[in-house]
Image (cartoon, rainbow, N blue to C red; front, side):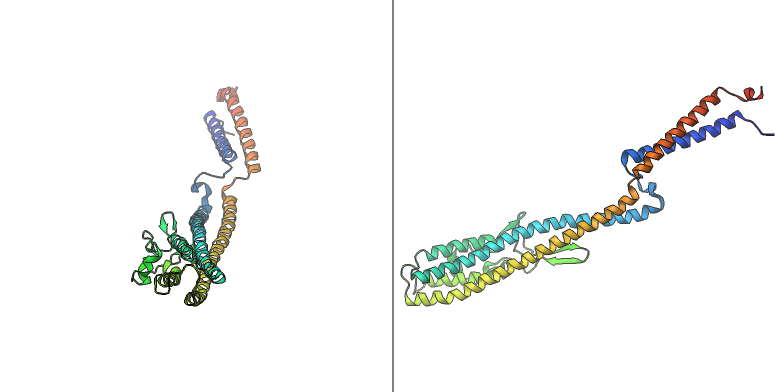
Length: 308
């Protein structure tokens, strides 16, 4: 004989209703958030894998943010290096023109102007920090302000305030590049050549103005090779900066690819299957409705009713 219990029936139906409502809430959350869960506990045995992948994703994002700053700094550095190289080229051209015209009119004014350009760019800043100062980023790396400073008796080295630290940047887990260049490396030969022009102009064979004397022609012809070398060296430094820029771009592209792959892998775990979630929601609602109807029927019945 089967045992009939009103309380037992109610208990079974309520348990079914609560289970159906729980499934409905879960399905509704997946449909609304498009995610399988809101916390690691929702992913059970995949939680450890998900945590590891999110840690890697966070590290990649950190590298991307850092590399954006490095790229911007290198762009500013490229502008300064190019302008300094152009100043050297302009001085050589001014000397060439003076020799071709046999006249040094305005030569030293042009030299002074290019000196100011070179010093300004060797003292270039990014985010308030001097680019070519090594670790002394708050100290102006070139202290000379006019050509006459170079012939004051102090050695050329005394006009450079940078240290020997060449700044490096870690682009990703396996790539570290040297981004820093030093004012003394870039400018010593240039300042020495500027010093020679200023000393000659102020010396017994000067000034360099008007028709050139034989001594002035010889001096200027000898200067051409020095300024050619200076221009070439500065162009090489600019090219080296460009190589680093390309490397930063390549690493940036690689990081984007890695992050896209990782995002897909994380999504495979966290993103809800919307078709399944919608089906689960429909089924759960149907179960809730059906169980509720049974409960309603049960409310009108009792053990006494069944025994009649």
